[in-house]
Length: 396
Image (tube, rainbow, N blue to C red; front, side, top):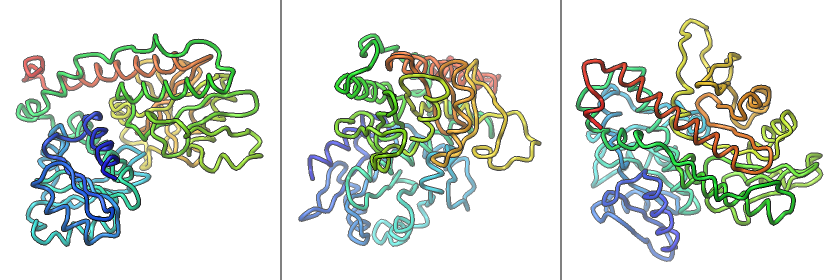
């Protein structure tokens, strides 16, 4: 169990989602195991001992998103409704707790909220997330909440009140990151037609790992597939893309096998995309700035309230099409296939990116890198336009 704790603590730091020195993990084994910031242990113990869960993560995000978020929402606000469709689909809403609403000595309010939700936001502490059976589940739930906070905070800087100079300064490390493009690390990936099982599995594992390393997807988000005749190799639902060994299913297209039960929830979309385009490979990730910019829309009087499900319009990020599509319910399977062949890549509103390759994973990964770099540049351009009285370059 302690190895599992250390593994997922390392992942939190590698993701850049948790602040070293302000992160604690607790897990129930033969005894209660603790790891990380000792000052969070007493609060963690008081919570996990009252919940029927195996693990708990308490961590402050590495970037000051919590501070910005709390400054920008009303004091009486008790929840964050995620803008990204992945988090909204699986977590619905995220409770938000102010310092004045709980006690470290008796955190019963936090216990009650975590009994109803997998993750919560707590002022002065950060993100708290539980795992009902494994440490991995707590890591996944933490990362989901972090993704939602990241997207919500940066979207609001573009679309709500313009950022103050203080807010820009707080996010200086992020602006510095965005000034450096994501490296096009595809030359060493397997090249050529993927025909043999061993080639396919090795190429999928290599591409999944590289996608995570480039931070184009959090470890457990996203999926990838490779068509082979009348069957499809596809990553399993909930599989970590940087650890796909043993987590890739071979699913016949005629549903003659039960393998589809454990396959990615986007199996139907993958099949439809391959059938429409004749591609060999699909890579699906959640690059953060591609997700953020996909939420931008100039139409305010269209009458649509559930944009992520009901919008029929095709918008564009540069030359890349953006469509709506409900997660895991067939919507993506209908909306993405007709448009993805235009550029070999398409964005699903508030969800993520699908990219295709004619032979291997070099083409889709390169396309995803290029799109995310374009979106990072476009985000900074729009932010500078919002702040004409400030020179953002001086902040970098």
